[in-house]
Length: 369
Ligand code: NAD
Figure 1 (cartoon, rainbow, N blue to C red):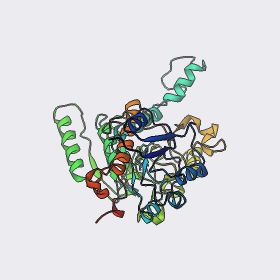
Figure 2 (figure 1 turned 180 degrees about the vertical axis):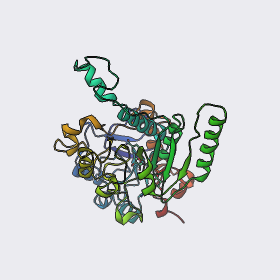
Figure 3 (figure 1 turned 135 degrees about the horizontal axis):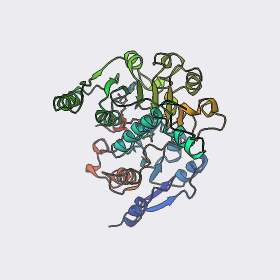
Figure 4 (figure 1 turned 60 degrees about the horizontal axis):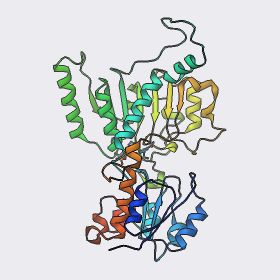
């Protein structure tokens, strides 16, 4: 039986759209690569759609839900982070929203690890040297050296899905791991990693046995050679342990002057003015960022200062941007597949139409019976 649901997607998400059309859905996709203006989304929602596919670029709040009153049934977000969706507003209007957790975990974690390595070993600066024909000689320490990653200590801030996957990558590099998470401490995961570290040591794969443990935020920052951030963006009114500007003038000064910061979580977790200053004044050795307070990164950003270019890597919110992760229509492999499955679950009343049982719905609390 064909279903006649109307859906608007604020962005093309590939073949998964055809999957909906094959089911009889009427799907309109915003044709341009940049985000539609909010007024455009409001207009589409008001025109009577059942489902809205969104990305992190769209501000979804009371204005949108009001426009969809009586018709809009689901917002399907193509991302794991949902700080662009006002959860309280969604709950007030009783609109479920879904996300695409898990399928981007490994891709994001590996990207964070690659960034960490590229930053510490100065790969960007070294390639520029070669390309710009400034490679005049081989020399023991000129024109610069990088820092080893193997055997160093990494602080993982936020030990949810991506933080834990990131730790798995660190194990292969014999790193000591300092975990910090005020809300979720996965002690059985830590025990498993400890067992693996012990086995690697016992079998002679590593000389000094690395360790893994939960510590305080301050200890993590003070002891780490690398700090990798894997937290959601949470404002003061959303959490007792908010993450907005978690890295600021004060906390950046806790880090070692030889330490590197990697942020693939959300831009506003780091105060960029403070970070640019920390890099200029050598409070820390370097930073690699995938996310920014304003995206795309404005031309006037202090992070673009040429004086810090050798120690500041800037990526275009790219950590999950791998082929299968982004586009697979399989909900167990790709964000596109999981996004449309979340939408289908709600619209077609899967799980006995019990929204609180649907795996990809985030705001289940609004539907608990
Ligand atoms: P998750 O919810 O599984 O894990 C987040 C963890 O952070 C949780 O364990 C939580 O307890 C912890 N946390 C909350 N407040 C904290 C605080 N103040 N200090 C330390 N830890 C805190 O989420 P996830 O799937 O691991 O994703 C994490 C975030 O990564 C997402 O919310 C998203 O913003 C970001 N992300 C970015 C990209 C990218 O392309 N750059 C891709 C995927 C996810």
